[in-house]
Image: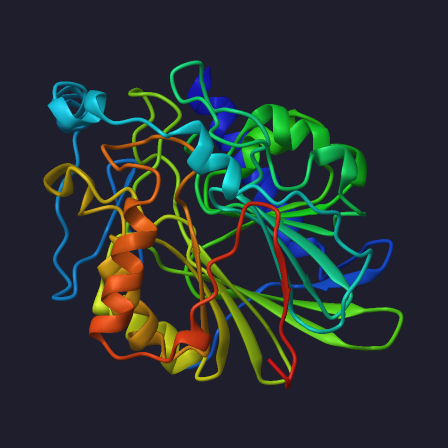
Length: 369
């Protein structure tokens, strides 16, 4: 029965994507999705036996079994330093700067709400990434309140989801945003939950598929592209890698904002993103957890690798994300930022290109920045 339901849902989504050449929202028109040009040789997700796999720079891929995930999780819990460090409350308070963003912005503006939740304003669109306003579980308590609470956000036009882990796809937070009737963009396989929970405008994408969005008010056009990441997925041990993971690039008028989501390091991945988007203004890159590296390193950028990725992308500014909100590894609160600053200095990069936002802080990017 479950397989029959999955087939029916898949056919429904395919039918919608075929018959809906465009979808009209309150303030913009969603055109038919299409594959980006010039990506024939770019990396694509591997899908074998109902599971997705990361592709290595040499086109190989590793099998991933739930038993490996369970074993690595047990090793993390047994790692002594994971229990010997904690987020000091005084340290976290100094990084809390709650705000209320403006209703709209033509220029690129980013408010870091915490973890991978960013409120992005661009060309009068309001976009939120991986929304989570609480804690993913009783075990992973939030260090700070969200930089903007869900009930203080202006109208949300678009939700971008990178993958379905509970610290990125939080059901309570998403339900709190449903009243906005947003257009939800998700990697392949992730639409079902949204459909079953009353989200009317949901579309799935694979890597390099793009979505053109036409604003009604001033005829501006924005393109959002699904791009690769090195990670994994699963809501439990029973659905490991059943759905795809991704990053997203928001672009218009030769300006691009790259949201990496949750990713490990792949030079090929970042080189290909730079090739397709040679003018990335903002790179929102994860910088943790860093420790223990032998467990976290493959699927998460360390702070030092985030600097490497920033240079691979040839971006103008770096905003670090995915740190200081939940204690997911053995990092102390300031470890990711301290290591990021050191790597930045070691690579002799300009200080004004690194923007470390406090939780709730908003930065606007125009020609004078």
